[in-house]
Image 1 (spheres, one colour):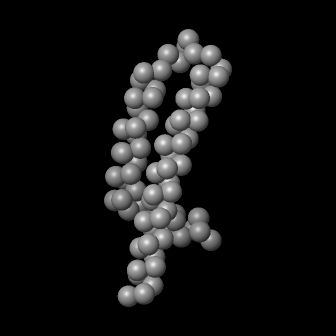
Image 2 (tube, one colour; image 1 turned 90 degrees about the vertical axis):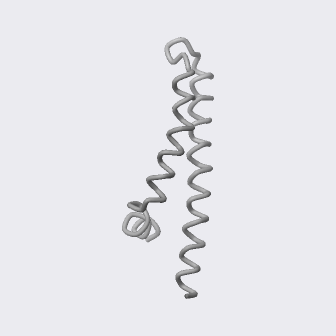
Length: 76
């Protein structure tokens, strides 16, 4: 049900598009500065974990904002 709400109500908003750009601007330096062919497996795993952490943080912030908006809309 939450996925349906997200997909139908929130996914196409300008806030999501803006967040996508912000996330990309954080991920791009990770990839551009990485020696993908020369890195070890551990370094690659670390890179993926750092990229995942960026997405996780952004998802948490966006989710909290969405929840706050839902609550405000329900109370008004």
